[in-house]
View 1 (cartoon, rainbow, N blue to C red):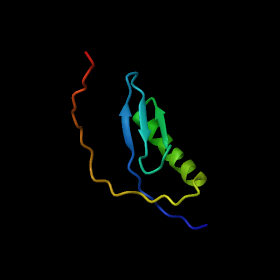
View 2 (cartoon, rainbow, N blue to C red):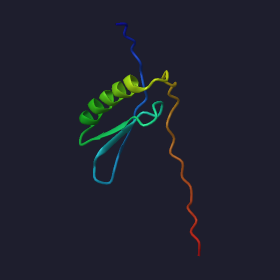
View 3 (cartoon, helix red, strand yellow):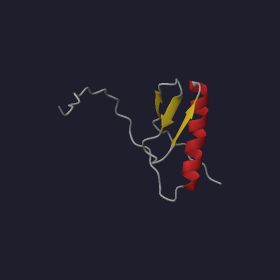
View 4 (tube, rainbow, N blue to C red):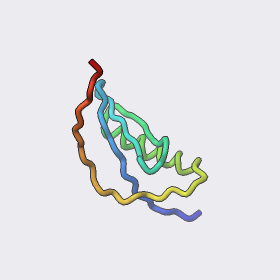
Length: 78
């Protein structure tokens, strides 16, 4: 069996309860969560492997460019 090493960008955020949530933008539906950064990193690796095994479509990692926060105003109806 031939192996290939793939690098994926993982976005990790923390919810209001302190739980870490990780997702892989290149693989639709590939996400997980954990109580610690270590736990969420281990789990996202497992999730990626499962997604790649079950995905019949070829997945190619995208080139990471950067992350930018954007601020917008939300308008409410009066």
